[in-house]
Every structure is written in structure tokens, then in C-alpha cells.
Image (cartoon, rainbow, N blue to C red; front, side):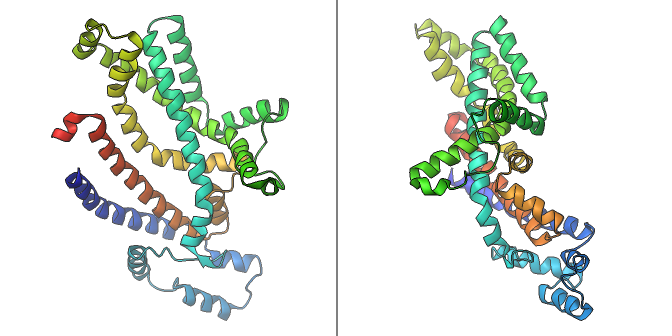
Length: 323
């Protein structure tokens, strides 16, 4: 496993370098800049002051020199300076990251719990009315746009029934309820955005888990387990489900970046104060160092998650570890 980890880390270095270069060049090609926004809003009217600011932040240098300096800065884990917040980009991102991580983990938990359970149930009741209903529900949630699903869930559970809050991360004065009350308040606000983001991926996992379970249930070792007199539930959960989880683990690694991107849309719908809100604010204000920092850090996270997926594979399937 240590050899596999070293190999994956070495492969991640050129991949991350390519991500940094590509994102930097795309940002450079984007129209407008923060300094033009400042001029349009009459925050800076003196051309000499504007040129001085450009020199201070280094944007008056050639693009290749800016790129080289940025690569060296990223190697030191320095992602530049945020014009709008007047803070290091890393600190700005870290202030919003916990809310996004909480949303992503909750959404993935919903997706795995619902998707895997529905897939196992559909495979156990294959070609029955229950299988058809579960498969139809999975297709429905897969086809529904996440922002539309979020709005519909808000209308039903927040506006009509009044069970859940419309948006935000905390109630006004929620921190005055004590640590436990604050945690419960955040969890209460988390239900709608987590379910909205998680149900789409749950639909994907359900379809994949069903197909994988049906394939595994036809293998020889399942027939052997049944012949030994093991119970149906034990065969399904302990023998079939464990081997059927391998495609789900693959999807989890591949779609982690999609979950991060989807959280940006969901955060906008539910006014969740995470990286999505920060990204939208940074794009609208042309605060490109923060935008670039979010893209690069997001790429790092996706690379790390895929390395962990490779390591998890070797734990789930001993044949991979043996090879």
C-alpha cells in the first residue's frame, strides 16, 4: 500500500501543475479586472494610484512572469492576496471552507445511504413492482435539475409545511442557545441543502448499485453461500453488497469534484455561506485571485480523494492488494 501511495503522489505532481497552469491562463483570458471594477465604482479615480496598485499586486508584469511567480507561490502554499477582503487568499478560503465541507459531507452521506439502500432493495426485489417503483424514483431525481429540486423542496417543507428554514446556516440569535443548541440549529438548516444535493447523486448510486448487485448475485460464491445455508439477508449484505460496492467507490472519487461544483449552485439557492457564495461574490467583483485559489484548492482536494479511493479499493478487494 505504501508503494501505491508513493506512486499516486508522484503522479499527482504533474497533474496539479497542469491544473494550475490551465486555470491561471483561463483566468487571464477572462474579461475585466478588479481594478476596472474599482474605477467603475469610483473607488479609485487617480490613474497614478491605479497604476501603483497594479504594480503592488504584480499584475503589471508579463503573463509568463505572473504564471511563474504563482507556481512558486503555490508550491509554498501561498495562493496570493485577496483584493476585496484585503487578506491572504488562503485565509479567505479557509473562513468559508468549513460550511462547504459540512454541506458536501452531509450530501454524500445522504447519497450513499439512500443510493446504496435503494440499489440493494431493488436488486433483492428485481422485476417486481417494488423494483419498478424504486427505479422510477431514481430516474426522476436524476432527471430533475438540482436548483429546481431545491426550490420545490423549499416550497413544500419550508413555505407550505413550515418544518424547515428557508435558507441560511443559522437562525438569528442561534449562537445564544449554547453549543448544543447551535449545533442542532445548524443541522436543522442543513437538511434541505444536503438532501437537495444528495438526492441527485443518490439516484446515480442506486442505479449503479442495483446493476452491480445483480451481477454479483449471479456469481459462484453467492450460490456457495446459499448452499451453505446462510440467511438471505446475510448473503445480501455481507457477501454481495461488499463486492458490489466497488463501482460506488469509483463513482465517489470521480464525482467528488462534481459534488463540489454542485454545492456552489445549492449554496446560492439556500444562501449557504460557503465557497459557493464566496465564488459568486469573487466572480462578480473580478476578485480573480480568490477564484483561482478556490479552483486550485478544489483540484487538490479531488486529487487527494481519488488517491484515497485507490487505497480503499485495496481494502475492499484483497485481489487488488495482492497484485
